[in-house]
Length: 418
Image (cartoon, rainbow, N blue to C red; front, side, top):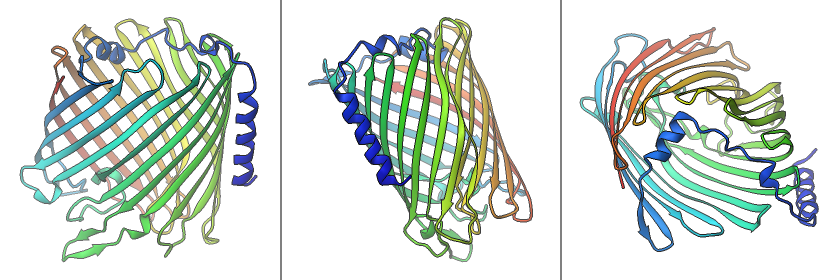
């Protein structure tokens, strides 16, 4: 099936859905039986905002300090530092009776006490919204742009980089949703462009990054069928492409992902969505082997009590590699998070995540683990505070292995909101 055939099929689906008489499908897709501990805490302490015409304005300033014992993610001779973090932001949320529009602008600065070359200034602006065609049919859209800094923990660059890699991005998407009795149809398109700046190695040697600049596009069609007001089954098909600006080592690709699964919100018990299926990716470069295999996407929240929420995450998919000699990574992710309401205004949390990256075409496997424990204190609607400890580890193996490293971080933060 070609991309044009997929779009033609999507257009036919939209046309067919538009002529069916609408029904109260929101009843068949009621997923609001439960609230997680974090969700309830935020709702109860949500700032009131400031009226700005038909919008509410929510200004926020996040301040923090981080103690990091291995800022370069080095295998030996680790360097520690103290980092001061400041993140101002402003969001505008429409208060209209129909349709919706949200605007956002924010920045993040990370200032290192000793390692000035690692100072960061990232920013992001964007908007998202919804057009309500009728009560059972609507269109959503989103557009974001900004500049970001790649973590030294990413594995995409050596520890010897003078400063971390920076990149700019534009992300956009639109989704059409149509409800007909127990059936919900969705057609979505997502686009992204990434432009990476070159890095620097000791001796002012250029660490070339132009071959990472690329466009990404994905088109997804999905059908859900509600078995009951709290359970639905679905099938989804995604077609995705990546096109690189510089093809010294051609990594242009196209691929498909097929998923079947269910989403549910069982009263006082569990909420989530799980999909399992198959994904495949083919490359324009004949030197690169096509990849295929198991696809898995899932998240479940278990409301073990009203005071404790356990969240499980899982992923299995093919992702792009920026390492020379390979274009694909088979990534498996599994994680668990626990949130506990010690008091109405004090939330304890802990999480553990594991990633396994299997590189196609070269002998390299990366195992990454992340552990975190922390606490958040909702002082009032205007002020929150928190503390967290995090440990990040990488174990890389194979003839093309990256470095092994461990990083420990202690973070304190305070948020001022209106």
